[in-house]
Length: 525
Image (cartoon, rainbow, N blue to C red; front, side):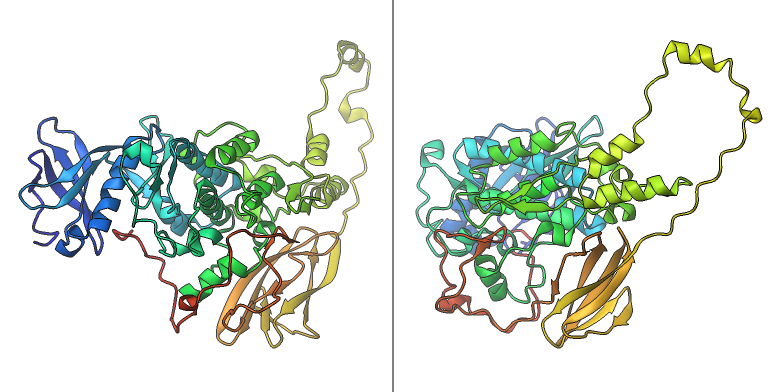
């Protein structure tokens, strides 16, 4: 029986299937209606006889229902019922009906989001995930497609976690064994967002793996892409997650406030002991920097404004413990213009001073001090003002002399050897591994590197001390293979010991693939 012919049927004598919402290779999701209460709901079905008879997959299916039912949070999708349809023998699950879109769709429509919007989305996701971790449940498949953005009655938005189908649950919570579902070496989850220990098939996956995955989601929301977006195949992707140095978020998105960049890098630290130990710690860290709590008004979900991309935030600094720390705090705001380069005015000298403070590091403090309203004049000043001649009798103040913008000239190293480059759409000659970049302080340029049919785009900003990032590398490499004595992975630029990580096993050797398939869901997102 096909998915198109069962609309209108009643499942388990209680739920009428109204219309098909989505389908995949293993099943489908329908809009449903409880025939007794007329309440609308979503009904997930395992339709395929092949998969419906697979005991491992059926256990995973019902595990999702049990895991969701024992977590009490507004940020976890509610599961009302589950079981087998007695007539057709299909496993089914009944969930709350959601209206909106998942964050995968939000990213496709908008690209990188304003930092405050990204922080609020991940904060709400961390609130729900923290409840799961408190209940002893590790989701193990956190990704944008499993974070659903729905509307409240007030008009505000709410993030809900979906799909606990491969969750690892403490046995005392659901009174069943998970033997066979979490075998060492079995890859359950979405590789794009997997932690290094999960890719390696470690047997001790815990809440810190979810923290990594949610940190990668935050990285993507802020920069518009995951750290390894250019991986050409699944094998190369998995090797990159285990061995390659993590890119700096502010190299990809120089506008990200340092305190938010610090939170992101701690969440995706390869040193598992340096990561937040659970989603509750990540939630608390975000609450400390988000100025007005977790509320998400719909108008902040928008593409990152162009003027915001011209802002160069103070950079993180490497601390003695090998972690990247914010030495300056600029704050998060919903108004991108308040943190972008200040608008030009007739007072050219003041504009240049403000711009230098923002770039060099005085940042938000200098900006606020120069743009703050003057204190109210004392009462005696108002009285004495009456004795002054009217403004028309005073000689006009001389107009300030225009100040020419400071043009900086720098060389930007590009790699690997032989790469071709364009700067803002025009060919940029590469000499001795460098290209010339110039512009006013705060200006940004689009650089595209091309080699062997591969290309990648970079946003480079001109600052007082040089260009950011200081080097761009297309990373066209041969297949990654473990080499004896190779440099161990790093976290934030410092060499660390990474527990439970080992060179990729033979079956991870990359095959010839034309592209990376992002659709690895059970039901097809």
